[in-house]
Structures are given as C-alpha cells and as structure tokens.
Image (tube, rainbow, N blue to C red):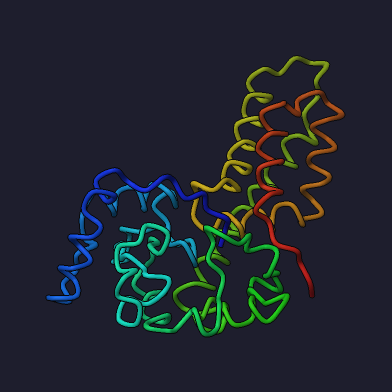
Length: 248
C-alpha cells in the first residue's frame, strides 16, 4: 500500500453528483460505474488496487469502485469523490460494509501507509492500532492471493540485484567496455523502476531492495566506478518515500 494523490473531482461528477445520489437512493443501482468516475480512479492508482497493490485487470482482478465509507450506511456519500477508491474484488470482498466511521482503517489518499505499517518476512504488520486493524480487515497477508505473488516479485528483484552486482564487480572502467556499462545501467535502472508507484507491489519491492545488504554494495561499486547516475539516485529517492520499515 502506498500513498495516493487524489486528483480534483471530475467536472462531470460535479455536475451529476446530486442526480446520481438520488438515483442510487431510489434504485440502489451501480450509479458509480461511469467512465468519468472509473477512469480517473484507475489513473490515480496506476491501475492498481489501492490497498494490496495488485494489478487491476489481470487474472480476473478487474477494478471495482470502493466506497471507503460504505454506501449502504452512508447513502449521501455514494458518489462523493473523496469517498471513492479503485479496489480489487478480493479486497472489496474482505472490507465489505465495514463501518470505517466507527473504526477507522487507512485511507491511502489521506494517510501515508508506511507511518502505520511495517514489513516482517514479507508480511505486513501494524505499527499501531490503525495499521493492525487495516491488515486484519483487508487480510493483507492472504497467503495465496497476496503474499505468494509479492514474494515471487520481490525474490525476482533480489536475483536481479545479484546479477547486477556480479556484472559491476567484474567491470573495469579503465577498459572502456561501453556495452557492458550500458548493460549494467539498464539492469540497475530496471531494478529501481520496479520500486516506483506504477509497478505492482511497489512498496514491498522498495522495502526489499533498500534493505538488501547486497544492494548497498552494488551502489557502492557503481559509485566507485563512476556509473551511478542522477537518474538512479532519483529513482532511489522515490523508492525511499514508499518503503516500509523492516522488523524481524
């Protein structure tokens, strides 16, 4: 889970909000299923679930519109822009009609998840009651649907770090091996790009990369050999903003 920046309310929703709210109260229909609502929500989250960060639209994980404050309790908020989030079916099923007014969980458009969550052996844990309740309600350590996929992605990126380290360790900047240098740069940028918000499980990947002892050695080698770039540093700085603290 990462912090999301909510864009301004779509102009068409501003115009139609009252009409759609009345329609919902009368019909209980899915009045939020409008492209002028769903498209901006998907863009806001880089087409990922706002809670578990899985890719929406893959393997049956089509996007649903989450009502942070449940619509069946708070009907006036059914198309309130600040109440809508992009979510996968799994997370939506777990959250259901849980009343977030009574017991708050993390709204990633308002709160910064790493302030309330930490990572322990690929499992999310709560730093405080808010974080603990969020993990529990959303089942954010669901073994089959979340933990295994994020472990596989994180494990793959660790393997990439090892490959990049082997390459850079054997690289001699004095020989001017341009092709090898380009290969190293591409591989390291690929690793760091997976730590950015557009990629699935980016918070987990960022945490794993930046806490990997070999990554520190890799960076030191790159710096010492003059191929650590400004772009790499910018990507690393971005990763630091979404990583979780790690505890054993």
